[in-house]
Amino acid sequence: MRLSLLDRSRTRTGYPDSAALTHTIERAVSAERLGYHRFWVAEHHAVPGIASASPPVLLGALGARTTSIRIGSGGVMLPHHQPLVVAEQFLMLDALYPDRVDLGVGRTLGFTEPVRRALRRGSDAPDTFVQDVEELRDHLDGASAVTARPVAERTVPVFVLATGRGLAVAARLGLPVVVGGPLLDRPELTDALAAYRKQFRPSPRAPEPSVTVSSDVLVADTDADARELALPEAWAMARSRQTGEFGPLEPVAAIRAQPWSGQLRERVEAQLAQGAVGSPATVGRRLDRLAEVTGAEEIMAFSSTYDRAAQAASDAALRELVHG
Image 1: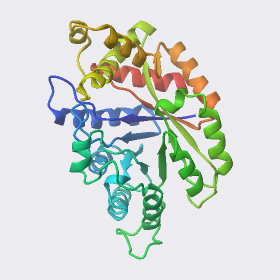
Image 2: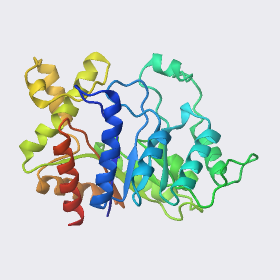
Image 3: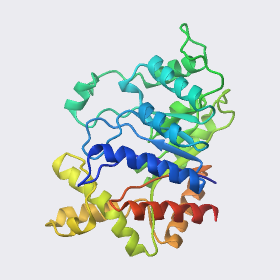
């Protein structure tokens, strides 16, 4: 099974936002050295806890610092972009870093109404995702009425980030999917993936259906140690439900020193229960189960913790666990 990383350029208290981008580049260099298959970056707008708002810009920096690992977007949110512009950006990246660039696309809007207004995309705007993906594909393949440049010398792989409806879109267009989020824990997951595979229409880009599973993964010596590593992310998620703001990662000691309400504790525990977090044995069982249920060809791990040395150790332990 292939193994990849998704990094969201999480900000950390005590560091400027710019450090999050430097940390992402350093992690990509390490992932290449460890032998990971892909390294993807995210798109989030006006979120205090995430510094990555422009995947193409960050991918340009990643390509310059690496030589072989595939780099890509997880993903470009098409409702906020013109398909021609996205095609031009990724054709440029592919020209600079041949046969290494992936384009993952999604349909998620900005998290808050002020952000959606700033992006000129209200929550009541029509859903044009299918048409946008088709237009993007045509621009990439030189099949549009206008020619996106630089002209493609090879096919740029396109993936659909799917948390539900995206599976049907990917099946219709003959594209591979990246599945994550709450869908992974829902009972309808197996049926949804079976429908994707059954309804898949082979295309020049993908003759067969392909599933990548994106899951939160952190590996440490013990389950307790891994839970401590996962606490900063779980805390940020739980706090965001109270404040409406997804904030930077905080040190574990600082989190423990703050007052915890009963509701907040429940939300933190619920977050910690998600994903594959634990010792190598615990994580191995969770990933084996995911592979069994989904039939996935690839695991794309995303994880964040305040301690960057522990994050690096987790990345190395995960690579060793999956590929020995």
